[in-house]
Image: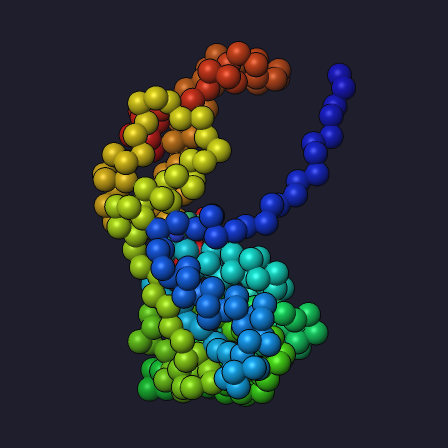
Length: 267
Ligand code: ATP
């Protein structure tokens, strides 16, 4: 049998259309991050320093990481990620070295965004600091941020679920002095997010996204994404018994395959 190589998997660029339910938050982040990265000359002309650090805070799964990736993609900036707990787990001295490395790379490849996920784990309030490791790491982070020059075209974005657990020194002017709340979406927001995650799905006529948005109170983006994926998998399971897995799926079956209301209910 002939075996066809799958086409090269290329990840399309993500855009502001891939993030839903955040209303004017997108505008805020564009102004704080994209604008200075793209047009530093505006800020130079006015004699003001663009923000060095922006804190995104809100419950898990609301799109903080997604937002940071999207803004990097839209600003055509290189994206560097640091994961708080992961970097903290390194050997003594190694975590600071890793931080320095990331900042050096970002400087060499600017415009750049450095994204620090779960920043509260490396920069907890002093009184809550358990160990020496966190203290050294915060000190290193502060030194690196203080050393950033506006013309270097780097923005550091920190994400946290617990904004009040962060060392205040981090939130002083010139550091993470801007904050954006990424909240739990309301019904309209959920509708928008459901629209995004079902964009590529053939939906049955009985699927009413408005109704789904109404009945998914409390769901965040990550939940709605999982719901849509699970519903699609349910549709696959429905046709599975009639399939010969060694053969391809007949075109007719493929064409008839739709994700139905029942799939969403099951999901
Ligand atoms: P955590 O605090 O757990 O790191 P987070 O806020 O960074 O969560 P993401 O990792 O960005 O959340 O979200 C996980 C996934 O959920 C995203 O990749 C995306 O598929 C989906 N998602 C979350 N929020 C949204 C949103 N507002 N619009 C569209 N999709 C979303």
